[in-house]
Image (spheres, rainbow, N blue to C red):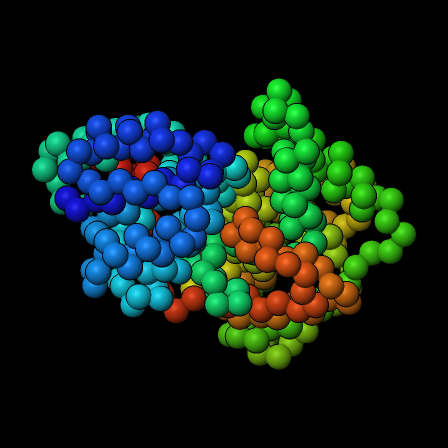
Length: 336
Protein backbone atom coordinates (compact mmCIF):
# COMPACT_ATOMS: atom_id res chain seq x y z
CA UNK A 1 0.00 0.00 0.00
CA UNK A 2 1.42 3.39 -1.04
CA UNK A 3 1.45 5.49 2.16
CA UNK A 4 2.85 8.91 3.03
CA UNK A 5 2.94 10.31 6.57
CA UNK A 6 3.11 14.07 7.05
CA UNK A 7 4.11 15.23 10.54
CA UNK A 8 3.72 18.85 11.58
CA UNK A 9 6.49 19.46 14.11
CA UNK A 10 4.79 22.71 15.19
CA UNK A 11 1.62 20.91 16.28
CA UNK A 12 1.03 20.69 20.03
CA UNK A 13 1.95 17.01 20.18
CA UNK A 14 3.83 16.88 16.90
CA UNK A 15 7.36 15.61 17.36
CA UNK A 16 10.18 13.72 15.75
CA UNK A 17 9.20 10.85 18.07
CA UNK A 18 5.97 10.36 16.13
CA UNK A 19 7.92 10.53 12.88
CA UNK A 20 10.23 7.82 14.21
CA UNK A 21 7.26 5.66 15.17
CA UNK A 22 5.97 6.04 11.61
CA UNK A 23 9.35 5.11 10.10
CA UNK A 24 9.56 2.04 12.32
CA UNK A 25 5.95 0.83 12.06
CA UNK A 26 5.53 1.70 8.37
CA UNK A 27 9.05 1.22 6.99
CA UNK A 28 7.99 1.33 3.34
CA UNK A 29 6.10 4.60 3.70
CA UNK A 30 7.40 8.10 2.98
CA UNK A 31 7.59 10.12 6.23
CA UNK A 32 7.86 13.90 5.91
CA UNK A 33 8.44 16.22 8.88
CA UNK A 34 7.23 19.77 8.23
CA UNK A 35 7.35 23.12 9.99
CA UNK A 36 5.63 25.42 7.51
CA UNK A 37 3.10 25.65 4.72
CA UNK A 38 6.05 25.93 2.34
CA UNK A 39 7.27 22.51 3.52
CA UNK A 40 3.86 20.98 2.81
CA UNK A 41 3.65 22.57 -0.62
CA UNK A 42 7.19 21.40 -1.43
CA UNK A 43 6.27 17.84 -0.43
CA UNK A 44 3.22 17.88 -2.69
CA UNK A 45 5.15 19.46 -5.55
CA UNK A 46 8.30 17.36 -5.39
CA UNK A 47 7.16 14.03 -3.94
CA UNK A 48 3.72 13.53 -5.40
CA UNK A 49 4.47 14.59 -8.96
CA UNK A 50 1.31 13.97 -10.93
CA UNK A 51 -0.23 11.40 -8.61
CA UNK A 52 -1.04 11.33 -4.91
CA UNK A 53 -0.25 8.29 -2.72
CA UNK A 54 -2.98 5.78 -1.95
CA UNK A 55 -3.10 6.96 1.69
CA UNK A 56 -1.83 10.13 3.33
CA UNK A 57 -1.74 10.29 7.13
CA UNK A 58 -1.88 13.90 8.29
CA UNK A 59 -0.18 14.15 11.67
CA UNK A 60 -1.08 17.56 13.04
CA UNK A 61 -4.11 19.72 13.64
CA UNK A 62 -6.90 20.81 11.33
CA UNK A 63 -4.63 23.34 9.62
CA UNK A 64 -2.14 20.64 8.61
CA UNK A 65 -4.80 18.59 6.83
CA UNK A 66 -6.32 21.66 5.19
CA UNK A 67 -2.89 22.78 3.96
CA UNK A 68 -2.31 19.36 2.39
CA UNK A 69 -5.66 19.39 0.61
CA UNK A 70 -5.24 22.95 -0.65
CA UNK A 71 -1.77 22.10 -2.00
CA UNK A 72 -3.04 18.95 -3.74
CA UNK A 73 -6.01 20.78 -5.22
CA UNK A 74 -3.69 23.49 -6.57
CA UNK A 75 -1.73 20.76 -8.38
CA UNK A 76 -4.92 19.18 -9.74
CA UNK A 77 -4.33 15.91 -7.86
CA UNK A 78 -7.06 13.46 -6.98
CA UNK A 79 -7.47 13.34 -3.22
CA UNK A 80 -6.09 10.18 -1.55
CA UNK A 81 -7.58 8.49 1.48
CA UNK A 82 -6.80 11.07 4.15
CA UNK A 83 -6.12 9.76 7.64
CA UNK A 84 -6.43 12.44 10.30
CA UNK A 85 -4.03 11.81 13.20
CA UNK A 86 -4.68 14.05 16.25
CA UNK A 87 -1.43 15.87 16.97
CA UNK A 88 -2.87 19.37 17.11
CA UNK A 89 -4.61 21.43 19.77
CA UNK A 90 -8.36 20.99 19.33
CA UNK A 91 -8.26 18.25 16.67
CA UNK A 92 -11.83 19.04 15.64
CA UNK A 93 -11.83 17.22 12.32
CA UNK A 94 -9.86 14.23 13.64
CA UNK A 95 -12.30 13.75 16.51
CA UNK A 96 -15.13 13.85 13.98
CA UNK A 97 -13.58 10.84 12.20
CA UNK A 98 -13.21 8.82 15.46
CA UNK A 99 -9.42 9.08 15.29
CA UNK A 100 -7.51 7.06 17.94
CA UNK A 101 -4.27 8.16 19.58
CA UNK A 102 -1.37 8.79 17.16
CA UNK A 103 0.43 5.56 18.11
CA UNK A 104 -2.74 3.46 17.80
CA UNK A 105 -3.49 5.03 14.42
CA UNK A 106 -0.11 3.91 13.09
CA UNK A 107 -0.52 0.45 14.59
CA UNK A 108 -3.94 0.03 12.97
CA UNK A 109 -2.52 0.92 9.55
CA UNK A 110 0.44 -1.41 10.17
CA UNK A 111 -1.89 -4.37 10.77
CA UNK A 112 -3.62 -3.77 7.43
CA UNK A 113 -0.26 -3.54 5.66
CA UNK A 114 0.96 -6.75 7.31
CA UNK A 115 -2.10 -8.56 5.97
CA UNK A 116 -1.35 -7.31 2.48
CA UNK A 117 -4.50 -5.21 2.16
CA UNK A 118 -4.39 -2.51 -0.51
CA UNK A 119 -7.03 -0.11 0.80
CA UNK A 120 -8.37 1.45 3.98
CA UNK A 121 -12.04 2.02 4.86
CA UNK A 122 -13.12 5.59 4.15
CA UNK A 123 -16.15 7.83 4.40
CA UNK A 124 -16.87 10.63 1.95
CA UNK A 125 -16.47 13.98 3.66
CA UNK A 126 -17.82 17.21 2.21
CA UNK A 127 -15.88 20.38 2.90
CA UNK A 128 -16.59 24.09 2.64
CA UNK A 129 -14.75 26.83 0.81
CA UNK A 130 -14.05 30.11 2.59
CA UNK A 131 -12.08 32.72 0.66
CA UNK A 132 -10.72 29.99 -1.60
CA UNK A 133 -9.59 27.76 1.26
CA UNK A 134 -10.97 24.30 1.96
CA UNK A 135 -12.11 23.73 5.52
CA UNK A 136 -14.46 21.54 7.60
CA UNK A 137 -15.54 24.55 9.74
CA UNK A 138 -15.26 28.31 10.04
CA UNK A 139 -16.89 30.97 12.19
CA UNK A 140 -16.91 34.52 13.47
CA UNK A 141 -17.54 35.96 16.91
CA UNK A 142 -16.93 33.89 20.04
CA UNK A 143 -15.52 30.93 18.15
CA UNK A 144 -12.70 32.97 16.66
CA UNK A 145 -12.26 34.90 19.92
CA UNK A 146 -11.99 31.69 21.96
CA UNK A 147 -9.35 30.33 19.61
CA UNK A 148 -7.38 33.57 19.72
CA UNK A 149 -7.68 33.80 23.52
CA UNK A 150 -6.59 30.19 24.00
CA UNK A 151 -3.50 30.67 21.86
CA UNK A 152 -2.61 33.91 23.63
CA UNK A 153 -3.06 32.20 26.99
CA UNK A 154 -0.60 29.47 25.98
CA UNK A 155 1.94 31.94 24.61
CA UNK A 156 1.82 34.21 27.68
CA UNK A 157 2.13 31.42 30.26
CA UNK A 158 5.59 30.75 31.75
CA UNK A 159 7.06 27.46 30.49
CA UNK A 160 6.59 25.72 33.85
CA UNK A 161 2.86 26.56 33.77
CA UNK A 162 2.30 25.73 30.08
CA UNK A 163 0.88 22.25 30.75
CA UNK A 164 -1.80 23.76 33.04
CA UNK A 165 -3.18 26.08 30.35
CA UNK A 166 -3.36 23.52 27.52
CA UNK A 167 -5.93 20.89 26.63
CA UNK A 168 -9.55 20.86 27.77
CA UNK A 169 -8.80 22.52 31.11
CA UNK A 170 -6.92 25.35 29.49
CA UNK A 171 -9.62 25.70 26.86
CA UNK A 172 -12.29 26.04 29.56
CA UNK A 173 -10.14 28.54 31.47
CA UNK A 174 -9.77 30.61 28.33
CA UNK A 175 -13.51 30.54 27.63
CA UNK A 176 -14.57 31.59 31.12
CA UNK A 177 -11.57 33.71 32.11
CA UNK A 178 -11.17 35.65 28.90
CA UNK A 179 -13.78 35.33 26.15
CA UNK A 180 -17.01 35.18 28.16
CA UNK A 181 -15.81 37.69 30.73
CA UNK A 182 -14.92 40.20 28.01
CA UNK A 183 -18.29 39.76 26.29
CA UNK A 184 -20.28 39.97 29.53
CA UNK A 185 -18.63 43.32 30.25
CA UNK A 186 -19.04 44.64 26.71
CA UNK A 187 -21.66 47.42 26.50
CA UNK A 188 -22.70 46.59 22.92
CA UNK A 189 -23.59 43.35 21.16
CA UNK A 190 -22.54 42.80 17.54
CA UNK A 191 -25.14 42.07 14.85
CA UNK A 192 -25.17 39.86 11.79
CA UNK A 193 -27.31 39.35 8.69
CA UNK A 194 -27.39 35.80 7.27
CA UNK A 195 -28.30 35.64 3.57
CA UNK A 196 -28.96 32.41 1.67
CA UNK A 197 -27.06 32.36 -1.64
CA UNK A 198 -27.64 28.72 -2.55
CA UNK A 199 -30.35 26.07 -2.66
CA UNK A 200 -33.51 26.53 -0.61
CA UNK A 201 -32.71 26.54 3.11
CA UNK A 202 -33.58 23.70 5.43
CA UNK A 203 -34.14 24.05 9.15
CA UNK A 204 -34.95 21.53 11.87
CA UNK A 205 -38.01 20.55 13.83
CA UNK A 206 -37.91 19.88 17.57
CA UNK A 207 -36.74 16.31 16.98
CA UNK A 208 -33.86 17.42 14.73
CA UNK A 209 -35.50 16.34 11.45
CA UNK A 210 -34.64 18.60 8.46
CA UNK A 211 -37.61 20.65 7.26
CA UNK A 212 -37.99 23.40 4.61
CA UNK A 213 -37.61 26.97 5.87
CA UNK A 214 -40.63 29.08 4.84
CA UNK A 215 -39.42 31.83 2.52
CA UNK A 216 -35.92 30.34 2.58
CA UNK A 217 -35.18 30.50 -1.16
CA UNK A 218 -32.00 31.92 -2.68
CA UNK A 219 -31.58 35.56 -1.65
CA UNK A 220 -33.63 35.23 1.54
CA UNK A 221 -32.45 36.83 4.78
CA UNK A 222 -32.58 33.89 7.18
CA UNK A 223 -31.57 35.82 10.27
CA UNK A 224 -30.81 39.41 11.22
CA UNK A 225 -29.99 40.48 14.75
CA UNK A 226 -27.48 40.14 17.59
CA UNK A 227 -25.19 37.13 17.79
CA UNK A 228 -22.49 35.52 19.85
CA UNK A 229 -21.35 32.89 17.36
CA UNK A 230 -22.00 32.81 13.61
CA UNK A 231 -20.44 30.05 11.57
CA UNK A 232 -20.79 26.88 9.53
CA UNK A 233 -19.22 23.48 9.14
CA UNK A 234 -19.38 19.96 7.76
CA UNK A 235 -17.97 18.38 10.93
CA UNK A 236 -19.81 18.37 14.25
CA UNK A 237 -16.77 19.13 16.36
CA UNK A 238 -15.04 22.44 16.98
CA UNK A 239 -12.29 20.94 19.12
CA UNK A 240 -12.01 19.13 22.48
CA UNK A 241 -15.28 17.31 21.84
CA UNK A 242 -17.35 20.54 21.60
CA UNK A 243 -20.30 19.51 19.37
CA UNK A 244 -21.12 23.02 18.24
CA UNK A 245 -22.37 21.96 14.78
CA UNK A 246 -24.26 18.82 15.67
CA UNK A 247 -26.24 18.68 12.38
CA UNK A 248 -23.15 18.95 10.17
CA UNK A 249 -23.27 15.33 8.93
CA UNK A 250 -27.05 15.23 8.54
CA UNK A 251 -27.19 15.60 4.76
CA UNK A 252 -24.46 15.18 2.09
CA UNK A 253 -23.68 18.40 0.25
CA UNK A 254 -25.03 20.64 3.02
CA UNK A 255 -23.30 22.53 5.82
CA UNK A 256 -24.73 23.20 9.26
CA UNK A 257 -24.93 26.98 9.46
CA UNK A 258 -25.56 28.36 12.90
CA UNK A 259 -26.19 31.72 14.51
CA UNK A 260 -26.27 31.55 18.28
CA UNK A 261 -27.87 34.74 19.55
CA UNK A 262 -27.80 34.31 23.34
CA UNK A 263 -25.88 36.72 25.52
CA UNK A 264 -22.59 35.62 27.06
CA UNK A 265 -24.31 35.25 30.43
CA UNK A 266 -27.07 33.08 28.93
CA UNK A 267 -24.50 30.96 27.11
CA UNK A 268 -22.60 30.39 30.34
CA UNK A 269 -25.72 28.95 31.91
CA UNK A 270 -26.13 26.61 28.94
CA UNK A 271 -22.49 25.64 28.47
CA UNK A 272 -23.02 21.91 29.18
CA UNK A 273 -25.90 21.66 26.69
CA UNK A 274 -23.94 23.64 24.11
CA UNK A 275 -20.93 21.38 24.52
CA UNK A 276 -23.01 18.22 24.11
CA UNK A 277 -24.93 19.52 21.09
CA UNK A 278 -28.39 19.50 22.70
CA UNK A 279 -31.32 20.39 20.41
CA UNK A 280 -33.46 22.43 20.55
CA UNK A 281 -31.73 25.14 22.53
CA UNK A 282 -33.00 28.72 23.03
CA UNK A 283 -31.55 31.48 20.83
CA UNK A 284 -30.00 29.05 18.34
CA UNK A 285 -30.83 29.52 14.65
CA UNK A 286 -29.79 26.42 12.70
CA UNK A 287 -29.90 25.74 8.96
CA UNK A 288 -28.63 23.30 6.36
CA UNK A 289 -27.29 25.40 3.47
CA UNK A 290 -25.12 25.09 0.38
CA UNK A 291 -23.94 28.71 0.14
CA UNK A 292 -24.48 31.78 2.29
CA UNK A 293 -23.07 35.16 3.24
CA UNK A 294 -22.80 36.67 6.70
CA UNK A 295 -22.67 40.47 6.92
CA UNK A 296 -21.54 42.05 10.18
CA UNK A 297 -22.09 45.55 11.56
CA UNK A 298 -18.35 45.97 12.12
CA UNK A 299 -15.05 44.23 11.60
CA UNK A 300 -14.97 40.90 13.44
CA UNK A 301 -12.36 38.12 13.75
CA UNK A 302 -12.93 35.14 11.48
CA UNK A 303 -11.32 31.73 11.89
CA UNK A 304 -11.06 29.09 9.19
CA UNK A 305 -10.19 25.55 10.21
CA UNK A 306 -8.59 26.64 13.45
CA UNK A 307 -6.63 29.62 12.06
CA UNK A 308 -7.73 33.22 12.57
CA UNK A 309 -7.50 34.78 9.10
CA UNK A 310 -8.12 38.37 10.21
CA UNK A 311 -10.94 40.87 10.56
CA UNK A 312 -13.86 40.87 8.14
CA UNK A 313 -17.10 42.80 7.64
CA UNK A 314 -18.56 39.93 5.64
CA UNK A 315 -17.67 36.35 4.80
CA UNK A 316 -19.11 33.69 2.48
CA UNK A 317 -19.36 29.98 3.21
CA UNK A 318 -20.07 27.51 0.42
CA UNK A 319 -19.96 23.76 -0.07
CA UNK A 320 -16.87 22.78 -2.05
CA UNK A 321 -17.52 20.91 -5.33
CA UNK A 322 -15.41 17.88 -4.33
CA UNK A 323 -15.48 15.36 -1.50
CA UNK A 324 -12.55 13.92 0.44
CA UNK A 325 -12.31 10.18 1.18
CA UNK A 326 -11.40 10.36 4.88
CA UNK A 327 -10.14 7.30 6.74
CA UNK A 328 -12.95 5.99 8.94
CA UNK A 329 -11.02 4.93 12.02
CA UNK A 330 -13.96 3.14 13.61
CA UNK A 331 -14.35 0.89 10.55
CA UNK A 332 -10.58 0.45 10.34
CA UNK A 333 -10.35 -0.72 13.95
CA UNK A 334 -13.10 -3.24 13.26
CA UNK A 335 -11.13 -4.58 10.26
CA UNK A 336 -7.71 -4.42 11.89
